[in-house]
Length: 530
Image (cartoon, rainbow, N blue to C red):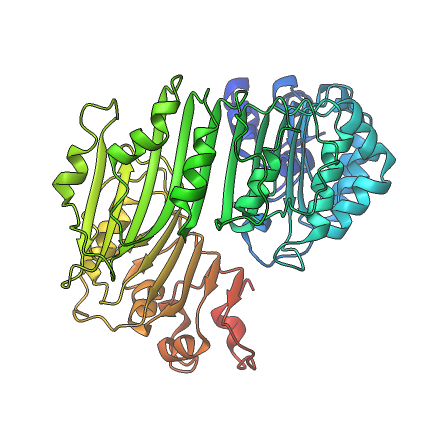
């Protein structure tokens, strides 16, 4: 953004309410750097009480770029803000978002007596743990003031990092007033699993914590969180990587009467729905709202339906006011012949049990030994949609931000056109299909994904690569991140000889080609922002 000056009479003559609306659309750093000290009116509005209550000293574009590891604030700009701005407004700041590289400068610039919400973003796991251990100012803030804390960590060195677990443990020990914690689930691209199993049963946990949002590696980690130490926890939003039979019996029969809201997401298929998930839900006798996103694998059985949901655990939840769900059931019947219910049977199983509108579709193989049922409450209220295939019948999915597509038969142009209309706010698309398209005579109408930032084509046939990356076929105005096989990339560019303007590469900030390669001489012309 260009710095404004006193000659910008058309802007400066705008009414206060219009100027404040403009300021609220800008990044905080840009506002402070470009508008403070321009003139008395802008100075007053920029440092307006309502505007500075929530300060975000980060660049969201940097966060959206998956592999960026640098500071998003220029050191000179940061210095100016710390010297001239923060000392003037420190007493007005209620919420603060800062990065690893700027944290020390910002928290040393002034004290923040009203600060209650702190977001630490773009941190390396070791730096975060070191700061929590050694930074006395940060520790003092966490101990005495912070009630709302958000943590974002760059990709840990290990899939389940012990250092990340230790940071979580330290936060719970330090924060004496903490009531809301979002741990490593601030951005869809960086939802890292925190192993709780490493935390000893004697570890102190925050007795004040009411709401927790977290990703964990397994159901064992979830059970550790619900072992009774978080005694005031009433809201749990949890994503579980894997669900399997735990080695230890961790409070499997103890009721959880304080829990009022549960959102449980487990996208990986599990065989332990009946043995682990159902008993866990039966412990939550006072739930008022329940959200379930589950992928269930069963053998010699049938689909999860409305009758089972009610009889297995909903009957125990006498205070439940709202139940939102998406349940994928995949059944394999090799030993026992079980008649699969039809789509109409699934729909009828919900009648008369107090459910809201439900949508389902069923797919069975020719031998009737394998079946798949996709079942969800309407409106669809989840950010993820997985296992979309050619059986898709359409719908409206305005909440969905991440979509996974997979099939063993080709995806055709008309399906992608339908998806672009049904998923209007899609940001992440994962496509897996090695089979070439049968109908390559694409419609003259562009497929448009106006909000798509990340596209994963590593397991996609080159036909789909062409469909998405050629501007004649698709319009992707916000595409920042691309994962693709190098061979597919060289094919569609004809070894980087085709006109660079043909492709949707203009705004790419990260490119993963899944192998080492030597950049051709004109590589930068295709990817100018990498």
